[in-house]
Image (cartoon, rainbow, N blue to C red; front, side, top):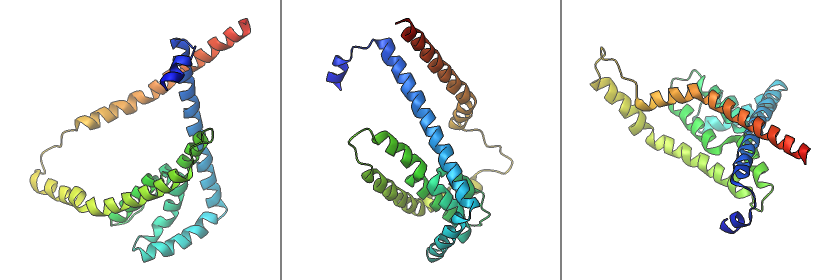
Length: 213
């Protein structure tokens, strides 16, 4: 990397401009893959393929004592994690642990949408994609196992402690990190629009420069 930096004849401004442009291209690519796999998931649902596969997955869930109703949103999550996580969170199931296990697997596996993004980036390199895929699969399994192990000490015991020690009349103060997260949600779109404007300006300046030469 150091030798490549020394051989690079671009100025600092040009390097920063290329970095911004590459980040915008990556951002557009990620959004495109999300839309693509969301559409694929919806098409599979409309033509009935998702329901058929979900029925088969439901039999496996019965053997694992998982709710059968979670098969379809879990299958959607294998394609696009946000759709699957939202579908699982909206299930009317008394037990929270099965939903947490499935969502943990989806987040660890990352979904085919994220894996397609990684594959497109690795296509121009000599890095193989198969180790990443199996690592994601292993990550999903480990995440589910850790959820089962840590569910009681981190969730049930904490709930019991809060119910026993916090008076009903006492108002819970908002966490510092929750406040930071709310602020990030508010300014996040403005930051994205700002960087998009910078990218458009850089492209416009380069087009003028190319026309002049």
